[in-house]
Image 1: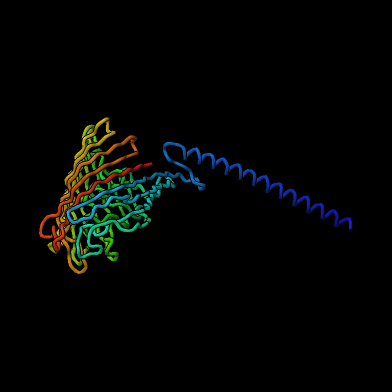
Image 2: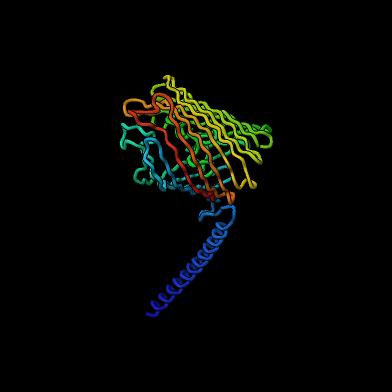
Length: 378
């Protein structure tokens, strides 16, 4: 019996020692996690937006939010005035090592879509009007980035195409007018996202570079095309210019999309201009061009701007037939930037439709609109 008591006491002492050791290790781990959590909270409060994940990877967070209120009317368009929706974008970058990082953008949209935007009486509704709200979320950027050399970067995944100026803006609050120019709203023009591989390079000491990428047409998932861009900046970065192209199969034909862009950004003036032409090989070539000059007042806190925006939208489909149209969008506006990352906008514009399709079944397609919007980047 005595040896059983001695054995029990020995086992109990060993168990106690193990438990004490486990408790001590657990206490140290909790203290370590608390220290990491304090570091994370302090990092989140810094102006760099950089934090550490629990895996100790360097993370950078950012994003933007934008909302708007619109009013429109026209000869054969019913007057409407309402909140038209909001967009929230979240940007994330994870730095795994000096040679590898991950970049992501996820956009969430609450929108009251503009139905029958071109006022065609064959459609339902018969006149342009705002529809019921829709909610959508999508990943617009998601790629791994690897520097191959100091002047060459390889990206694999998906992202905005480096085509021209407007198409490669990651944050919509950067546009002087909400929604940007018609180059982003013209049917079957620029494919907006590259998918697969993107190679970006710079030429040194010249202030110039290039982009090469693969692209899948959004309406032809079983095909793939190629895109490219050459760009150059002046020595003081006031003047930026570029030429872009995309080549792919489209509607059974080989299509080539070409573009040229020019941006002047001086202390007092900002001028943006682009031209894009889609040569389909079928004789119907949609193309668009715009110029958007602005003057900066109060050290850039206020922007006064005008714009003239032309689109020959030759590939608009209406069931089995086409509804080609030509339109001018001309307007004026003002931006107020109380801080470098906050923008309030007011835009007034008129859209005028030209040619034989400017009126359909006696229904005029012209209209005017007034838009108020606010955006913030963080």
